[in-house]
Amino acid sequence: MLSLVPVKKCLPSQFQWVWAALLCLVASPAAAAVFEVGPGKPYTAIGQVPWESLNAGDTVLIYWRSNAYQEKWVICRQGNPNAPITVRGVPGPSGQLPVIDGNAATTRSQLNFWNQERAVVKIGGASVPSDTTPSHIVIEGLDIRSARPPFTYRTPTGATAAYIANAAAVYVEKGTNIVIRGCVMSDCGNGLFIAAATRNALIEGNYILGNGNEGSAYEHNSYTAAEQITFQFNRYGPLRTNCLGNALKDRSAGLVVRYNWIEGGNRQLDLVDAEDSVELQQSPLYPATHVYGNVLVEQNDSGNSQIVHYGGDSGNTPAYRKGTLYFYHNTVVSSRSGNTTLFRLSTNDESCDARNNLFFVTATGNRLALLDGAGRLFLTHNWFKPGYVNSHSTLTGSITNDATNVTGSDPGFLSLGRQDFRLNTNSACINAGTNLHPASLPLHQPARHYRKHLQSAPRTNHLDPDLGAFEYSPFAAWQNAAFGTNADNAAVSSEEADPDGDGIANLDEYAFLMDPLVASRVGAPQLKLVMIPPAWHLAIQFPRRPIPNELTYLVETSSNLAQWQQGSWYSDSGSVSSNAITAEVESAPLAVVRMVAGVQDVPSGFLRVRVQEHWR
Image (cartoon, rainbow, N blue to C red; front, side, top):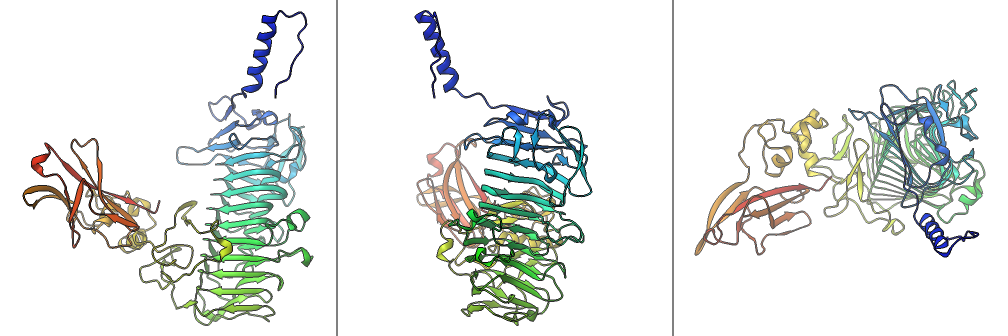
């Protein structure tokens, strides 16, 4: 917007100059600022950053140092979709995240905000800076801890104050388009707390563990309420010892929980009513919740025997979710010696559509119950141990079982002991799935899977979908068979590793059917000449794994070893064995691919086969 400033006694040329200056000033936004905090940086303390005047596009970089930053702050400013306000930790030399310790933390004197006792890092709710709804805020790469009794902090005025029981590492009082990514949140009442005035939150790639208060069931690793919130690629660990809270507790509308590793807690998932927000209760997103692609781990006899609670807990049953929990492609593993119950649906107005899951208990099958009592459960194409029961108490709801579920004594994990819950070659869960409920498509079709730890990888189907959180991976099965207990040791088993020291990485050893623990080049691609009358042709010969193999074998040609052209290629999703550059001569037992041009027609020629993996 332009505004005309009257200028008295100005010559026309002067007035034009003033107008041009105003036009330039208003039309060109100020450049975004970068505030660097850390040893040898312009700011040595977080409190030196002007939090009260951050603008769209500004970035605060907090560098790792050997001692923690004992500081806390509020963000109550607005970014925009193209220029968020970002607070980012810069890791140390070994990947260490900067530690933000709430115990004895100080606060910048210029800030003035309420609920200081509830967080180390707070978003929304302040007098200085002026109160607003923060928007487009990103917090990433910080290790935030120690906000709970008996820890204390210093207010902006310098007074000592105590944290209250429900204090959090990160507390979002209100905001829109909030991203919390790649952080560690621990040793607080709640690791993460998000209040109901929040809209569009993404909680991604965080490690949330060791929170809660002894003897209390009211604080959790994360406790959230928002309209549209997605949890993905996070790792949840157990709460603090003798703390009775849940791993992920949520009261949102438009909740998506996908591709997470959630271990421990009173319940792994406690998805209940928006008790403090009529607006959330009335949202059209409130009745549908999507939970898929997760690994849910119940430790031996810890916490509640129920894995998932869906509906409500306030006692105000008209406000309960009263919708459908779409629960699919999850792997649930319980090592309880006693009973395990998969679902507690609060009333018969709550339903669950459970399909393509893998439910495994280490105890006998009859220790597993489907429902606590109430609710409507629909089951199709899941894996169970035989002998599971409908309920360990009185079933007051209903269970529809279409008799397509798979049973067996062993689901075929790569390694239960190593918690590698991917599928082995002989698993009955391979190609045993079915189509998803139409309400989950196309937005919530599983596209990725969790990768230990705090990573993800593409999920691609071969034939029918597999049961559980992981599609069968031939490469992972090969790693498990080749390396055994070292399969989780990246220095030995990763694609780039070369444990036998023969100069051939594991990926190529796998692709060409070689032994990764024997130093040998037998099986490696070889050049040869083949006669296709009336000319000789340069060719390359190599073994090729049968489909599915998660690979693309790409034959390339060059005349100078600098520029390469794509010739024949082979992959799970389709192949091109011949084109104008190369042509297949043989396909089995060895692939032989030749140059189309004869050796007499090119002054020089080179061939190579390049292997690309699909699981990254």
